[in-house]
Image 1: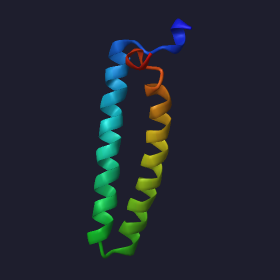
Image 2 (image 1 turned 90 degrees about the horizontal axis):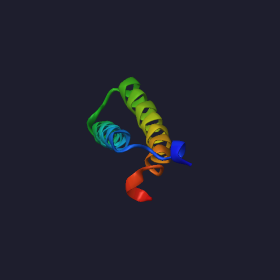
Image 3 (image 1 turned 30 degrees about the vertical axis):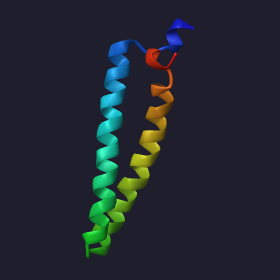
Image 4 (image 1 turned 45 degrees about the vertical axis):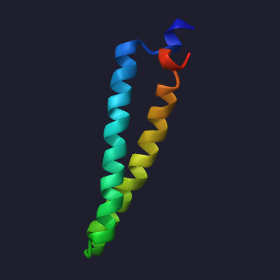
Length: 69
């Protein structure tokens, strides 16, 4: 059971990465609205989809936090 719970420093690092990925997601999503180049828009859409997938994976780790136990 103890191996399934993140240590406090791991929880903090996971939180920091989660915040960073969230900011990246928001920036890409907002920039799509002002971008006129279709290739760049497609690249940003790909980044948005990847960021959503990454955030969902990080949330699985974050749920193992000692703070949530």
